[in-house]
Picture 1 (cartoon, chains in turn red, purple):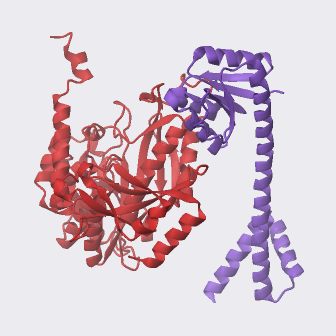
Picture 2 (tube, rainbow over the protein chains, first blue to last red):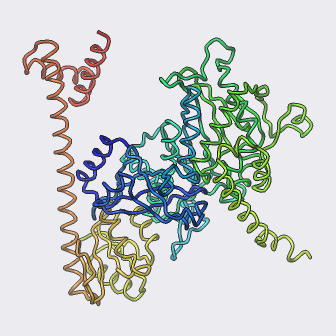
Length: 446
Length: 189
């Protein structure tokens, strides 16, 4: 552990008047967990001596591994900007370690797992850079604090208001994120009413996964402070665009040269870029259960709402799974368009990176790029061009995951087993429920 | 005295009573709200000077609401509390229920007066901070110019002034621009 970094964290805690530190990690489903400790315990925590009971955390639950260590990553120190009055609160993102005598990275910890895949890339001489575009909805809440499916900018409800509450809240989110060290590249209203997007600067995969987890926390907290509810649910309202998390990605050498760029090819994409896409396309069906992890996620992946449905790549068309933005040189990158923000960012990065690396290792050529609108093609035409569809439901995605050994490997046996268990249970709950649509459709008819 | 006020209480009789007293005294009651999130949306869209919050709002969320309003410097706050104030952190204005016009008018007036003064002071501090930062930047760039060109302090200052006028920039912007140029030149040499 880096002592200079630890000392600098301790100093920052003193200088900022921090009284509580939240030690954060995520469970397999990507839900942020935290253990709050007083500043006096910080040194002990930084030395990696703090334990917690892991048996009540989703996906950690093995009773013999109930006591685990939290090992904070000092580079993730940040002061939460929204509680300055009563003693500041800071956070550290942690890796989870198994108890003595082994004290090793816990196989069920998504962050440690991503580190493992990032290391595999490094062993091949590559660093993955990722830049996510997170979309979310802002809804109003009722008197009990329950979110309503009212978007805040629906005309009528706030006729009196001279300002747009959503815009105001989003501005506050951007300021807060900047206070926490994020570099915000863009923030804007999205296609659907009440839908917003905030993009932050790309970075190495692990840091970006940390950032996505923090981002969601900030967005939800600030929304609450504005009397609104922020949701990252993939498709909260049928008939309008859902929320995605398009993820731009590229590989660079260890000294920072973009290896997706090759000025000597017709489209200036290197072999590595093509093979990376080839890998993602090959494993697209298998990794979708990770990047689109809820029953609801698959209601977003339907034709007509700028979400991808078909496994293909394109330099123009946004109906394809992978789009290659026009920028070249150091900004050469591919944009994977199907992930949604309900995914566990650590697992999503891990499976996408592992697929890309597999493509490079095995020189998997992607099919020819498709620049036509795939939504408009007939089934026969798609079959002729060899364009597969993404899974149509969580169950189909889980089956595809089961058939993809590489993705299972990228998750590790522990996470894979726990993840699939919890997702099949979710699917079963969904299937057992009688949904309002069914009663509306059938109750009178039969 | 006048001012824009929002009244937030789950008890409708209490809300009406307070709003009535305030309106009679010439204050503008912009909204009456009965839950925390609705109140937050109102405060953020109506720009008021003062908000009167019942501590018992939403089962005790009143003080949390008061905290957010204070931290984000949205308006002055008066918290309405029950007889028992042993758990109150007393970091702001509060009034013990029941309210009456003799009690509430002076409290509202002083809260508004303090809010006005605090806002003015905050604006002044912001201005001073900006000035201080500008001064630091200019001093630094002056030092650089003196080092690089062997100029006197007044020559360096005059140069920054001229750059600012030539490019319609503030002194600070001009100084930052010069610093950038100097750094570029140094990198190239």
